[in-house]
Image (cartoon, rainbow, N blue to C red):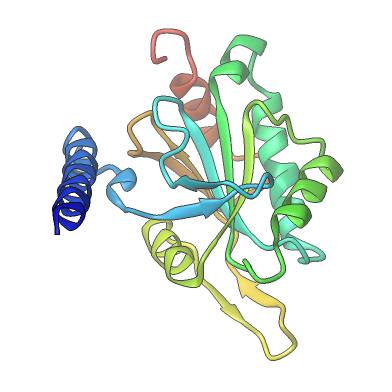
Length: 191
């Protein structure tokens, strides 16, 4: 009986910590959403893993032949317009909505293929319920097609360090206003 009381107390304490962490966030923070992601190392991490850094977030699936590679190249293009110090402050989080095929091994291979900087880029997958919730927050629409591929929107979202939306773009290249907001968000005085 005592073990159950200790276990219940520990669960309540962990729950209080989670509520406290969410309470520290602005009400408009997307990081209020409790969601878990799987990394290329097979680790389970929280959706707010880049909290404290400006972060470019998008959703994709690894077996996509056209839109997703263009999306990744677009994100790389936007970050290439930043100076070295601003780029060092930026993080990139790509969330796959195809966790069945985008295993940790597949995510690692995609990161290598696209030469994603592992110190700043994180390719992840999410369970179907978490992917749906993240997509709803970001405004990404997707649906599985009968052949197993996906029809999906292309959206790149810039979050500030607390998970608030700073800007979004549907253009993988050439969105001057988005680039300006990205430069401002990663400037030294913004952290």
